[in-house]
View 1 (tube, one colour):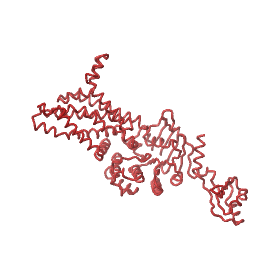
View 2 (cartoon, helix red, strand yellow; view 1 turned 90 degrees about the vertical axis):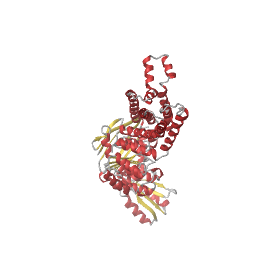
View 3 (spheres, rainbow over the protein chains, first blue to last red; view 1 turned 60 degrees about the horizontal axis):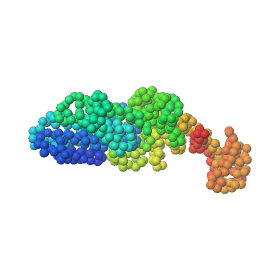
View 4 (cartoon, rainbow over the protein chains, first blue to last red; view 1 turned 180 degrees about the vertical axis):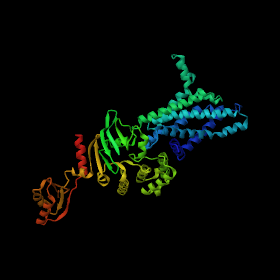
Length: 244
Length: 309
């Protein structure tokens, strides 16, 4: 078996051998349900679609994904197992990817377990299931981008709480950079191209179009590039900081 | 064969390892000695491929650790200090994971797992989470992980630290059994261990190599080497006579009641014979008498503290 997959399998297995996986999934399902039905006005809207469900994902991930990613590398460094891992005949690329994949697949599992909402909307009306599938994929890609940011920050510290807080802050910046409050501040002094660049950095901008069912390749590329960029940064940070 | 040439590691302004050069051949068990902070662990981490050297080269059977890390790592089994492992996994799952990462095929892995579990007597804890194991078992799981792929090079960072005397004995026996055609590098600050398992000892301090000899040659450096220690019922009266023997270079009284006589011989003299004769002539009652082989901890102190000054 490929080394990346062996690493990923072990990692995923360790999620489920501790309460972490179950707590995460239960909280995730409870929060998605309450956001969708109470804040999102799922029934009141009278429309057979899942946008009240997807619209809250960027905010939900803001706190839940860092809780998942904070341990990725910080724990390995704290317990010393990083020394064990990195003296095995595996490339750093396999290690970074393997651990990341496990976390990403795990968010995928959590996301799939929201299927009762999909059943509900299909029972109540006739939604466009293509849009829903696109929404799920977009949400999963976005979770992947959050995780990659968290992976890099987790690699920079031994302390999981610090990793959590910094990841929340960085992810928050990525979410709000598309909001008018932030952009207004930039328009006062920055050239238009910079304002556009900041707006284009936002998770929101790219996720909203996917969630509406518009699968633009540029949005998919955006999440892929953010993910790969942060994973590359993870590898660099690990290489720099592994000794300390 | 491991070739280490002018190996240097700096952390900012601090030099942890300073132009260290030595070689180790198969069959050797190299004891790596030095005070805490001497650079032992740093050197081992570099050989194992965890840390990159600032300068200098390490070649493991012809594979440069920096240029061909994966090939070098395949030949090495490494037990990091404190034997870290994944606490939530069972011993069996953990060892299987290591074997899969090391790309052992299914039947080899099953055979090696059996062998290693036998060798380290892990049968009773095979399906327990590692977190719940005692320190001695955890250390053994760490060792099992290191020898699972039957490596040509074994690097053990303080393998007996924190073990009880029985466990220490078992680990030493294991190292001795392993060592016939392998290179074993063991770091320790328990000096009796060096005499017990190592065929060669290196002492480093402040990142520099201070001594590279067999344990016996190190013992011979001791001022106690060849000295005679004896304890007599009549120690007080006998001391002046014994210390005036022509073969005695120097003498002292030691022990809690100053009743133990230590006689240091002049080089090349047969002190034991004349002491023995004198004891018989006077009919002294001998309570204890032996020839010292040399005290490693005293040699260690002389070498490492001499270098610090």
